Image 1 (cartoon, rainbow, N blue to C red):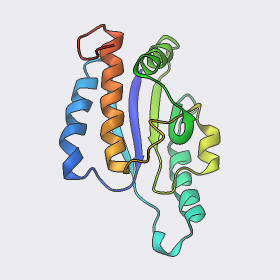
Image 2 (image 1 turned 180 degrees about the vertical axis):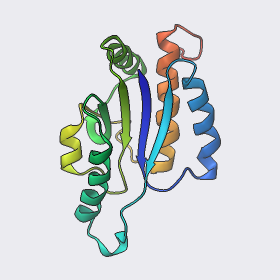
Image 3 (image 1 turned 90 degrees about the vertical axis):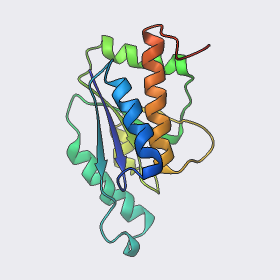
Length: 157
């Protein structure tokens, strides 16, 4: 199974780039892993939030493959603790899922058409975080889940 991080918006800011690269390298010891960054909607300054989400959604939907398992990071999603996340990843690996995609939406969230295609909606917290920071939190949590699955020392319960 391959773990893929999808995010809308600009490239990783310098303040998170090093952390993202570090956790991505660490995850690669457990699963193949990659990042795909989708550009923000063109002419966003002239579009409403709904039009922006729709434009971004088209890019995402066009990139999806039939067998992809997609987890949307969404403020209305279910909250998991680290063990629940690890169990979820293990379950998807056991099911021979080809691609497990974690999707971070744009500034206005994800279009309803995209959310309908997602298999799960996961909320990291009731707090709101900048999208750049969500990237590093997500990468660290996936790495943590991998160490839990291998019963390694990184996670302390």
